[in-house]
Each structure stands twice: as C-alpha cells, then as structure tokens.
Amino acid sequence: MSALAERLRVPGVWTFTDALGAREAADVARRIEALGYSALWHPETVGREPFSHLAHLAGATDTLLLATGIANLYNRHPGAMKQAAMTLAEQSDGRFLNGIGVSHRPLVEGLRGLSYDKPLTAMRTYLDAMDASPYAGPQPAEPAPVVLAALGPKMLALAAERAAGAHPYFTTPEHTRRAREILGPDKLLCVEQKVILSTDEAAARAAAHQQTERYGALPNYRNNWKRLGYTEEQIAANDPAFVDDLIVWGDVGTIRARIDEHYAAGATHVCIQPISLEGRPTPDLDVLEALAPA
Image (cartoon, rainbow, N blue to C red; front, side, top):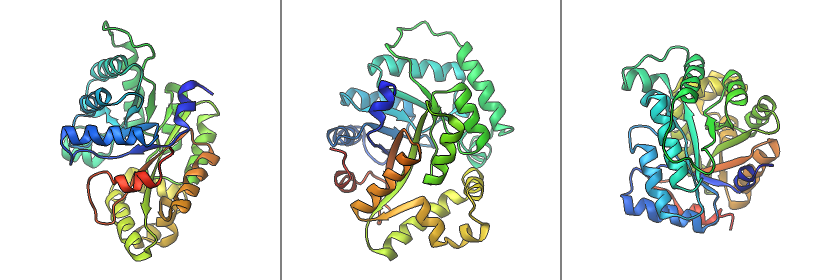
C-alpha cells in the first residue's frame, strides 16, 4: 500500500465551509486536524473557488490533507487546472489531492450556459489536455494525485485507466464493492458517506429526505441509484430501505459500522459528511468530535 493510501485509511471529512468566514473556516480545518481526521474535502458549486480556499486552509494546518471534492472541469481550462493543482501541491508540501469531475447537466448547461455533451469523452479529452499542458513553476515533491468523480462503470473504468483513483459521492457499500472490482486492487477509492448522529428516527429521516430530494433532482445520482437496484417508486417515495442504505443515522456505533462496511467493501478512504437535523450549512463539530478517529 502506498504511503498516501496508508494515510487515507484514516477517515476524513467532506464538508462545505462557504457559510463561514475565512478565519472561521481555518479554525474548523485546524479542529478537524486536531481530531485526527486525515483529510478535508471541499466541493465546488457556486461558492468559494476551491483551490484558493484550500490554499488558505493549507496555510492554517500542518498535516491535514486537502482535497477538491470535486473541481468542475467545465469551470476551468485544463492548463489552469494543472497549474492550480501543481501550485497547491508544492505550497502545501504534498498535502493536496485533486478531485475533478464533470458535475451535472443542470449546473453546467442551466447555470453556466455550457454544453454538457458526452461527459465521458469530455473527461478523457480533458485529461489528455492536462497531461499536455506545460508547467514551469517549482515542482512539488509529489505531484497531486488526480481522482475522478466516478459513479457509473464507464467513468470508473476511465479512473482506473487514467487517474490515481475515484471519488464516488452519495453511494452505498454495495457501490463501493462494485467500484473496487472495476478499479482493481491498487487505485485509490475515496468514498463520501453522509451521517446523521441521532437516534430520533423521525428527525433523522426528515433530514435524510432533504438530502435525497435535493440530489435526486440530478440525473447522475438518480441513474446511479437505479443501477444499484432502487426503483423510481422507491426513490420518489423516500423508501426507508433506499434512504437508509445511502445515509446512515443512529448512534456512534451504528455510524462507525457503516464506515467499516465501506472499508470492508474495498474503500481506501471514507470521508464523512455530517448532516445537521436543523439544516445548518456549517460543519457540525459536535458530530465530528463524537466520531473522531483520535
């Protein structure tokens, strides 16, 4: 196992920090590091530019791995993506993991006004262009590994062929098992898992339903859930069997058991995303403390 994979065996955190000021976000990153988590994954939607923000968090931390989960390839030229990744890897002393992806048609076409045609081809072409882009800045000790946002078998196969691994989002341990089969034994498989630390079934399910309804509007997730065997009726009705497979709720032991399921299914790394019962957009440090690896 590579040194990076060994570090990633310790769970990480996937979270938005856009509702926090710069100093508050740095405080949260330092707290996540102190709690023993291995990595902090930050998404790109319409908030902060992720490379700039992770550079700020790298300056506030010492050992925490910083990762984009994910940087949208439609938002930047492949040369700019490579420059940002190389710069951040160098300036963080190798603490950067570059997660990139094609995002979603409603965000790319509806929000950005760009064409979302043949995303698999777009990703392959983009990786070719990144490889060919020159970079004359100081070389990092270790170039940032690239992991692809991959759900379906074709994108997972591309991740196995052209990247360091994959970063599946909003999936199940069964998907992790299937992804590992496609990726092979040596690629990074960095899986996001939503968690709700509550034994109040009604409250937990209400919070979970907000997540499935929000992401269910995006075809990439919905199609993946159907590949896993869930029906349109189950998805539309928020069937408990469907929701509970995707989002784990309960006590600390229940949540840790789900994390362990992903590792047993072949995950290199699990990054947990705490979901607030109150719908707060900020990281729930109480949950992160309760689940801390340290």
